[in-house]
Image (cartoon, rainbow, N blue to C red):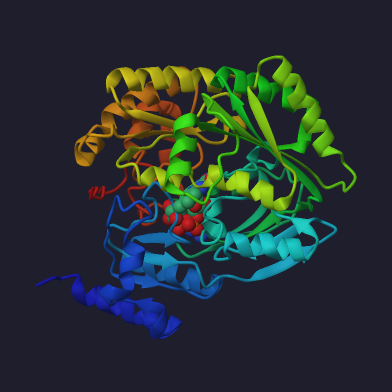
Amino acid sequence: MDIHAGANRAFIEGLKDRLGPAFVLTEAADLDAFLTETRGLYRGQALAVVRPKDRDEVAFVMRECAEHGIPVVPQGGNTGLVGGGVPAGGIVLSLTRLDQVRDLDPVNATITVEAGCILKAVQDAADQAGYLFPLSLASEGSCRIGGNLATNAGGTAVLRYGNMRELTLGLEVVLADGRVWNGLKGLRKDNTGYDLKDLFIGSEGTLGIITAAVLKLFPKLQVRVTAFVGCASAERALTLFHQLREAAGDQLTAFEYLPDFGLEIVLKHRPSSVRPLSGRHHSYALIELSSPQRDADLQGRLETILGQALEQDLIEDATLGTSEAQSQGLWSLRESLSEVQRLEGGSIKHDVAVPVSRVAEFIETATRACEAAMPGIRVCAFGHFGDGNVHFNLSQPVDMDKNAFLAQWERFNRIVHDIVHRMDGSIAAEHGVGLIKRGELLLYKDPVALDLMHALKKTLDPHNLLNPGKVLETGDPLTAIS
Ligand code: FAD
């Protein structure tokens, strides 16, 4: 007989009484979507999926969990890429019903939103009020603000606006014991002690449940121009980036990088896409300049800079997207890359960052090392070059068995992450640690930093109920299923 069964039943009934039975899901068919993650790497288990409607219900659920010793895994859109939202027992706390825009203050240039708001809905609310909320990710139609905060999400506009931490002024957080920390202030200056919000941002649900946030707004962009350029090496792309930054300053809003292999698989698997340049090149950069000033001559500026780059041999060819449709066409080449890589068989992925000045050296060194370790491996290093953030992905050799290739994941982690570490980089740039990288953290994170992280975890979550086993090794790992 399971001695916990009765206690768990009483716990679930208590939640149903307060939230309503429709918002405490216990049937296997209803739980399914909450137990797996985007890449299908892990499958979890849970007693229930609990869907509170507001902060007070979240606080109630947390008090009940604390009293019954039930672990809690918060979930937003469940688009995370490191297994951080997969439960290993306990409940999934889904924040999707907390989806209200609570306030928009035009003079303070802030928007106050609840954690369950879809990122795209926040962008749209800002846009309708004549402002820009600049966080932009390929998953923006389904990821939620709470998940963006908990992972300190980055995306394509970090170069100009920063990641989620830099876009946030205040937070409301429900703690492990059910108390509410009201830090929902829209202040640009506040030196009244430690910055608590920065602790919760990027904590991946291990320190508290984020229920709302005050986010910064920016002037709406009036003009943008996009260019797609072909380069003979990553090193030349880096010199071009430096020159653009010097010449265009804050108008440079994106500098994304794709290798030749990446562009070729996009063109192969998405027949509707158009080859942007007539020939093939070692690599490509997608560049965007934008401005809130209607009369800014971005096209003239970009043409001048790229003309000089051609003369200096920094680029071999270039095309400009001056209309919205052309810009979108160029962006879709970059944004389809993750999806089409799936169609090329197994991929081993690394989301890493190095200082921007070393990003070309990293790509070249790590590419050589991986090609030497496995002849035929196809390196697909792409991403937010201007932030020093590379998605250093490896596609399997064409004729290799997928599972045999994926079995080499640890070996390639060592090769790639050792190089990142030697370059003073980060082995978890924008997707976080979750389950996938917690072992890697032990190898590469400064031991004093790890001690401090454990001390904070113990203080804020003494009974280890908040997303146990994620980020830090404080609970049972789940078993990878493929
Ligand atoms: P979830 O997946 O639900 O949760 C992520 C983590 O946050 C989990 O650990 C969870 O427990 C925790 N969490 C969720 N909500 C809360 C809360 N309210 N309080 C406390 N903890 C919480 N990420 C980038 O940074 N940049 C990209 O460019 C990018 N591109 C992507 C493209 C695609 C196609 C996909 C599928 C994902 C991409 N991601 C990217 C990853 C992912 O979309 C982001 O990490 C996103 O911020 C997660 O939001 P979510 O609501 O889906 O969070």
